[in-house]
Image (cartoon, rainbow, N blue to C red; front, side, top):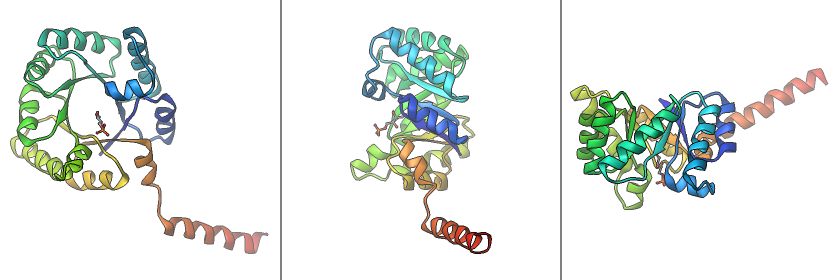
Length: 218
Ligand code: E4P
C-alpha cells in the first residue's frame, strides 16, 4: 500500500519524505487555506514547491465546478509539473471533466466520494485515483472502511484500473484497517503515519538490549 501525506504543510511533507516511505501528497483547498496560501500565483508556486520535495504524485484540486472551468484549471495544474494529479470533485460536471482530462493523458483524482455508485462512475470515467473519505463517513455513523472494502472488491471484480486512495484518515488504526481492506493508497496526517512506529514492547525491548549491552561493555 502506498503512503501519501494529506497536508500542504512543507515542514510536515519534508519530515515524511525524510522517513523514506512517502509515495506522494494530497492537498485540498482547506489544507492550502490552513497554511495561509492564497492568490493563484502563490498557490501554483506552492504546488511546485511540494513537487520539489517529494518524488511521487501530488494531488492539486480545482476550485471550478463547471466543465469548462475544470478543464481549463486541470490543464493549467497538470502543466505545472509532471507529478501533478488533478483533483476533481465527484459531481456531474466533474465526471465529464475526468473523462476529458483522461483522454488527454492527464491524471486525475476523483475526490469527495462517499458511495459505491460514485466510485463506479469515477472508474468508468477513467480516474487515476478515487478518494473515498472514510473519516467523514465515520463522523455520521457510517462505516468508512467498509466502503473501501466494497470499492476494492468491485474494482477487482470488474477489472477497473482506478486506484483506491483512502482519504479523510484521522488516526493510525484507520491506516491498518485500510491496509486490511486492500486500499492501494492511504493519504494520512503525519501523526497517523508516525503512530505506526509505536509499540510498548519495542520500547521495553530496546531498553533491555541497551541495558544488557551496558552491563558488559560499561
Ligand atoms: C484528501 O484527499 C482529502 O481532501 C482529505 O483527506 C479530507 O480529510 P478531512 O475529512 O480530514 O478533511
